[in-house]
Image (cartoon, rainbow, N blue to C red):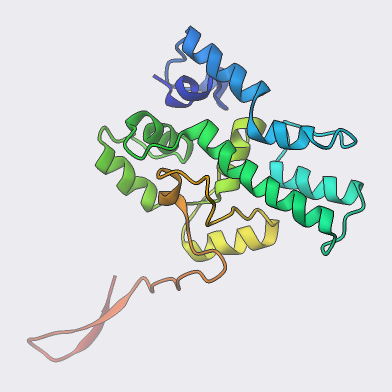
Length: 213
């Protein structure tokens, strides 16, 4: 069964998905909620003068809206809208993936989206796999609307560089953040340094120092 389809009623792979897309009233209801009652839709609906493209990246649409409405970086209207937008981003994540860190179906959806294969069968293994994965959370939200695959980065440093370059910042400390979301939070502004792939070890027998992988 395709967990993404089961959770949201949609799958970016479409007919190419190797998992089964099971039709049902539960899927239809969730898909309807995603497309008509999503928090990001509600946020952008507050600005009818802006022509919101719901199939584009939410962050890029926010920046485009600011430009269209003539809001500079220090504009009070932009600051107020940005605060509301950050809340909507967190609520959108919750809307798509859920908030319960003990829900195996939610973890399976995440694992499928970030291309963990095979998908672990237990909560513990799902959490372990996701905790070792570096992805931009805004991209996790966008993929549900754009259909674009989520990039998985090799390290926290690479993820930080991408986030700073694209401006796709996700609010780290937000009152709406569920327990599931916290497993994906990373240190973006001050990423932890990458460890060298080789370390020096000293042979107890010879006393010779050598490099090992």
